[in-house]
Image (cartoon, rainbow, N blue to C red; front, side):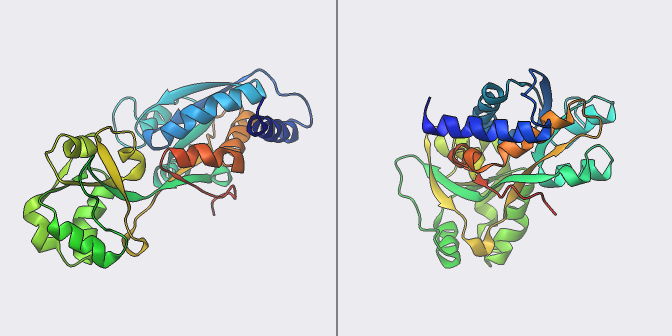
Length: 265
């Protein structure tokens, strides 16, 4: 067993031991409702949690917002139970306000920066400063961004803040989020702008980098315990594990930035 694995096991058992009054972890289940943004990190960390604690994760996937039958808000509205919700921060706040998530249980796990991609093998523009980003966008022949909150920010605010809205309007367009990097990879667009976590998995593109801090807009992903949780101790153990320092490397590898284990205010 590697030193890193030993550290993970020790951390998980310490958390569970504290929560269960020093008793050994039970071979029980923790039901998780999760949306896509934290998915890659969860897929790597979930099995580590299961192995370390003996708990089994039951995972339900669905959109964090919306009225589709499989959307997490609709599941909760129908009375479906869950132990843990892992969704974008504002969506978790909505469920807290709706009485579906315990307010004091919210923990911010990671945040996603907006970044830029170009087709693999093509020169990467300089976007290291606001002025450099402005020049890169003006020089680009075509720009695409997603139909998501980050895309709305790009089209409705970023271009205006850079003072180039009128000059890039004819060569930029909003497209479905899943197609942004694909559109760049297949040559439909020169530049794609989207959350880095959504860009990294796509083949055929190269990530240029994140937008400069002055014009960056982060999306935060948070975890919380459902008010109808059947295993609140297991839920709390999982959230502590996902927000621990040992979870940080896996989170970073997916393009997210790990956040502090301190509960959100």
